[in-house]
Image (tube, rainbow, N blue to C red; front, side, top):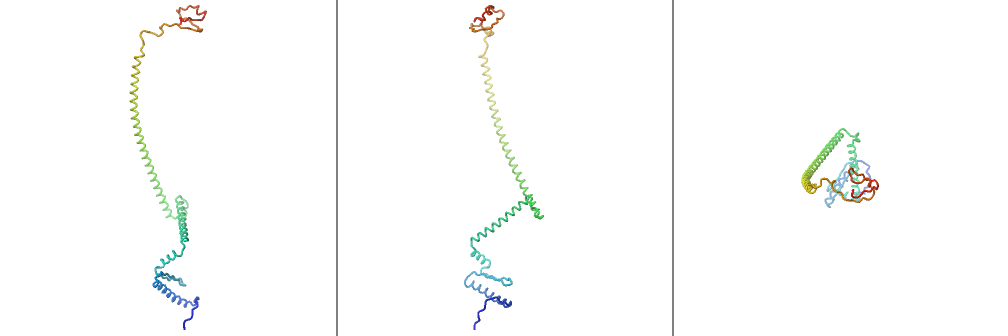
Length: 240
């Protein structure tokens, strides 16, 4: 007679349960191996006993098969959201770390730091200070060189202007000397005094007509009659 159907339920007897687990585990691992060989299939089998012991089988390697399983089963959209979430978490942690480092460089929140961390912070500050001073010195040297270059350019321009001014001054002096000599020659030829007239006051006056009243006082030795001036206040033209 054949064996009857075994009822599937938990075996209460601990020894019988352990024996059954060992037999069926070996049979399952054997069937997995046969399936992978006969059908050229990629098979992965993971078993944990009641005591937490691991039993596994992988025709191509457990890790490789699990990665392939994840790629096939997970939705790409969910996977991208998960990646974005992980990236955002990493960026947030990095941002907080940078903020904490900045506060430490400014001398804030130094209480939780240890002696070694404080020494590292001091070295960083000294290095940054040295770089800042080096950069400042370099900028000052470049500015001094620019000022010297401008000074040389201004010196050359000043020299050219001085030469031009001296040349124009010599030309102006020559023109001025020429003008002075020409003016002296013209004065000697056109403005000489005539020897015939000793004084312009000695010229004979010409008769002139006088209209109106004029108080005339004759000089001493004048030939004008006194009564004519006193009575009429009219001076004859030939007197003038």
